[in-house]
Amino acid sequence: MPLAHEVTGPAGAPVLLLGSSLGTTRAMWRPQVAELSRRMRVVAFDHRGHGHSPAPSGPYDIADLGADVTDLLDHLELDRVHYAGLSLGGMVGMWLAAHRPERIDRLALLGTAAYLPPAGGWLNRAAQVRAHGTASLTDALLGRWFTPGFVDRHPEVVAPLVADLAAVGAEGYAACCEAIAAMDLRPLLPGITAPTLVVVGAEDPATPPRHARLIAAAVPGARLAVLDRAAHLASVEQPGQVSVLLAEHLLEER
Image: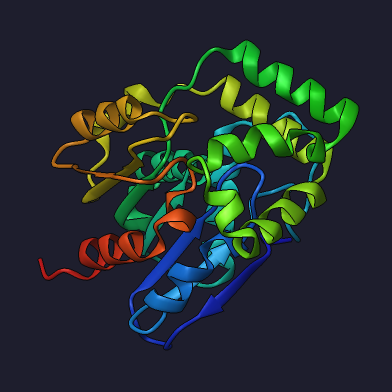
């Protein structure tokens, strides 16, 4: 069964896949879908264990999540696409660009890392979720997803994300945590050939800018953009800036 997904935009236009973060669904990309689908065919999907996607039994690794996306491309009969991913979605994007380079045209990596120790922190989070559910993470994650004051100023934006987090099954979320705990994509970065944009919020405590700089320095020709007044979910907190950056990177003439 393919990953849950929605397709928006004109047939025949360049295709963009959007991969969301751990604990969110494709709904986090709504501002970018609305903007980019004017000129692109946009496919937003839910990772396994998230949203309406199936949650196979663990353990998972990043290769499993990458294979899910490859299967989705096959299901949609898409040979080659642009890909943008945030956090976990970015990790999957790096894996795809390294292992399935023929399928990825241009790549955008937002608020992500190629290696994110300590593993113990991810394993502890997995244990917490299995014991108490994903809703138990809400307060801690909101403090990492957004800069101070954003939650109070924009409850209409935050409330759907909180609801989506609470709806994520404990086992699927925990198994994704374990995949991140075991992940080290750093050796793959020099082999990525897709033109790459790396974006990070200047105030991101989950994947601080040093992780973005490492990726940008290791991927040949990669470009780095650091966004002020943004934390981890930069696509939500600074939707206009992110949409502009993606459009410039994905649609520019070669």
